[in-house]
Amino acid sequence: MTIATDPGCVLSARALHLVGCGLVVLDAAHAIVLWNGWMVPRSGYAFARVRGRSLFEVFPELRGTKVEAAVLAVLAGGAPVAIAAAAGRAPFPLRQAGSFDGARLEQAVSVTPFCEGGERFCLVEIRDVSGNMDRERRLLDHAESLRARSYVDGLTGIANRRHFDVALERELRRARRGGTPLSLLLMDIDSFKAYNDHFGHQEGDACLGAVARALDAMCKRPADLAARYGGEEFAAILPDTTLEQACAHAEAIRCHVAGLRLPHAPGAAHPHVTLSIGVAACVQGWADTPASLVEAADRALYAAKRSGRDRVLASTDPAPG
Ligand SMILES: Nc1nc2c(ncn2[C@@H]2O[C@H](COP(=O)(O)OP(=O)(O)OP(=O)(O)O)[C@@H](O)[C@H]2O)c(=O)[nH]1
Image (cartoon, rainbow, N blue to C red; front, side, top):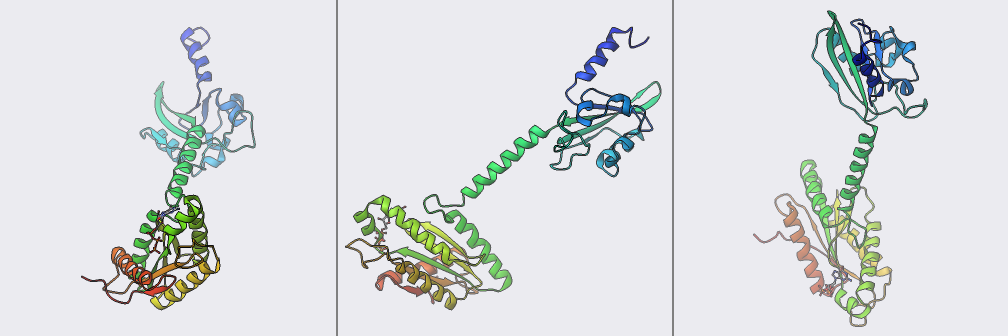
C-alpha cells in the first residue's frame, strides 16, 4: 500500500505539516528521513535539502550539546529524553518564520525512540517556547521590582524599616565573623510635632524627605545604610566604624542638617530643623544583637533629647540585664 492510495496516510502526511512544532525523524545513522513543514521557514531548509543528511551535518552547532547526547543515547536503545528550555541556550539555529538574522527561538526539545520495519528511529520534537520564556522573564522582572520596592520607604525614597532590619542582622553577623566594629545611629527630628502643627502635615512630609536625602548623601560608603526607622526617626548602620568614628560622623550629619537651615515652627526648641542623635557600637558581649544595639542607641537618643536636643550622645554603658 502506498501513501498516495491510502487516505489515512495522506491525511497523516498533511497533518504532519500543519503541526505547530518542529518534527524531525532520524534513522539509526541519524540521517534525516522526515522534516515537517514547521521546520522549513524557521530553519531556511526545505526537506529536499536535508533529506538523507546527518542532523549534525545540517546543524554542526548541535555537536557537544544535550540534543546530540539525547539523540545518540536514544538511537543506541535509551529511553525518551526531554530537554527543558534554558534562557539564551537554544540548541537549534531556528528563528521566527522568514527571519534569518533575528534571535533564536527559545526551544524545548524531546527525543523519542520508535521502531518501524525492524529498524530503530527517533522523533525529535522542537517546541517554540519563546512566548513562555518572555512571560516568565516579565514575571521575574515584576517580582524583582516588587521586591526592590518593598525595601524602600514610600515617602522618603530611602531604605525602609524592613530593609534596615535585614541589613542590621546581616552586618552584625559579618562584624562578628570578621571581628570588625559596627556602629548604629538613631536620629530623631527635634520638636517635629510643632513643625507639623505649624506648617501642616504635607510640609511635614516634605521636611522628612529633605532630611532623608541629606542623611542618605552623608552615608557614602557602599556598606553604610541610611533608613527611615519610623515616623520622624531615622537610622544609619555604619559597618567597620568604631564608636568614636561613629560619633564624629553623627556630629557631621547633625551639622549638615542644621546647615540646611530649614525654618522650624515658632514653638520649636530651635529656629531651624535639627536632629538629636544617639550612637551605639557593637561590642563583644553586649549590644551585639540587633535588639540590644538598637536599645543602646535609643537610650543615647533619649539622653540627647533630655539634655537639650540638637546634639549627639553616645551609649557607653551596657544595656541593663
Ligand atoms: N508629616 C509627618 N509627620 C509625621 C510622620 N510620622 C510621624 N510624624 C509626626 O512626628 C511627630 C513626632 O512628635 P513627638 O514624638 O511628640 O516628638 P517631637 O515633637 O519631635 O519632639 P521631640 O522628639 O521630643 O523633639 C508627631 O506629630 C507625628 O505625627 C509622617 O510620616 N509625616
